[in-house]
Image 1 (cartoon, rainbow, N blue to C red):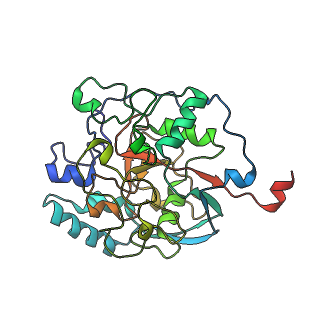
Image 2 (image 1 turned 45 degrees about the horizontal axis):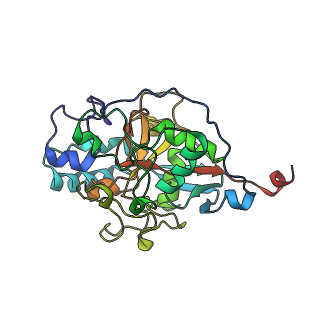
Length: 319
């Protein structure tokens, strides 16, 4: 069984409510071996510097609050208990301690990568389509929205799902970008002051897609659907709709030893970090400091991604 969350992290038998609160929609999906760092063939569409930064937002350099305080963890735990009485405080402790981090300026996609975006990549490179081709059961296949290298027109502007970390990494590199680091993702979501959610501290109702059942093409919403759910920088959909792959390997204790400037995550690991919560999760999972993880070679129908890019300064444009 391919678990997004290691068994040491949660009880082996999980209550159904907790599954919705913390686990992926396709719990138990088969793993597909992907060679790390596979080459990306096919050139991306030619673009000027301005075009390559289109639909991206610049995040200014500076310090921001990352992680959570112990008092916040207690509040999140109490909210979790309302969803499931078996919730444990230590499930949230990888957000500790709250700490200040300095990041250089960078750019991040305003929206999650859509099915239309990903189709351009598949068509240009011959990369595998966005589906779980390991499925052996109808239930598993029902989680695929693509049919081979095609998808329903109605999901063109929905975030692409059923992509592994390696798929996401390959797409971003093809675009001349990269996956954001965990710190970059959190700053884009919370701003310098460390908001609870991207939009502030109010509950997510009417600001995100969450707490839904799977209804195929009608499950997720188009990217950018919630203008009142954007972050202080104008980045959309950083809570709900789909979990998002980031660049970092996962380490529950990383915040206790991470550098104060431009942290890149551990040098190695077994799991990659995913952020933001998804359509299946409860509101407790949408707070922007929440950390979860997944095996980098699995594909889920609740996990997508967005890309980031280093800032280009004036001196670099004249080389």
